Image (cartoon, rainbow, N blue to C red; front, top):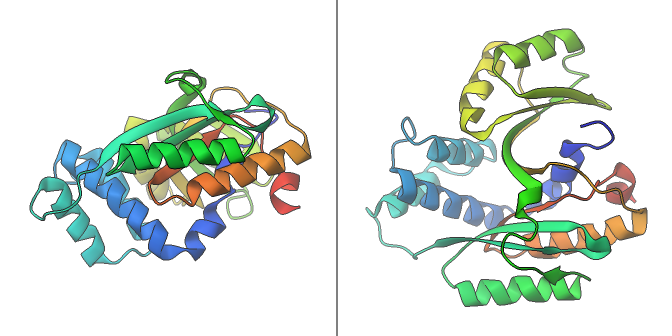
Length: 247
C-alpha cells in the first residue's frame, strides 16, 4: 500500500452521500433486496445480507425500511425486479473506472452511465477491460489518534485473520478477504478497536499516479456517476490525494 491510500480513494463521496440521505437509503435498500434475494432473509446464514443490514444501520436507516427491503428480496412483499450489473471504462488520464449498479431497467442505466463517462472525459469499455485490476476486499480504516499503539492494533488485526496492515498518515488500513469481513470486524471490536470506516470494496491491485487537475476531473466524473440512484459504487485505480479532494 505504500505511496497511496485506500481510505482517500473511498472517502471522496462520503460527505455528499450522507447529505443526501434519501438517495443513500434507496441505494442501501436495493443492496439489501439483492442480498436477500440471492441468499435468503436470515442474516445469520447470509453474510452478504448481514453486511448490508449492518451498513444500513450504521447510517441510521429506519428499521422498517430495512425489514421491507428484506421482505421484498425474499418475495414476501411485491416490488421492482432488480438486476446487478457492472460497467467498466476509462476516465480522464486513462485511469480505470469500475461501476457497480442495481437496476430495474438496464437500457436506462446503461445509457446514463455511458453519457456520464463521455461528458466526464472518459469512455465505456468492453466487459473485463479493467475488472482484472481490482479485487473485492474488506477494508477497515482505523484512527491512529484514537488508537496510538500501532503494534497493538497490528497484532489485533493479525489475530483477527486480516490479510494486511499498513499505516497511512493518520490512519491504519486493515484489509481482509471479503468473505471474512464480518468475523474480522467482530474480532476487532472484541479487542476494543472500532474502525472509523468498515466496508467491502473493490480495491485496486495497483494505483496510477495522476496530476492534481486530472484528479479533479476524475472526482467530478465519480460524483456524477454516484449521483445516479441506480449506481451502488464507483471505483478507480487513480491515486487520489488530499490535495485533489480538498482543493
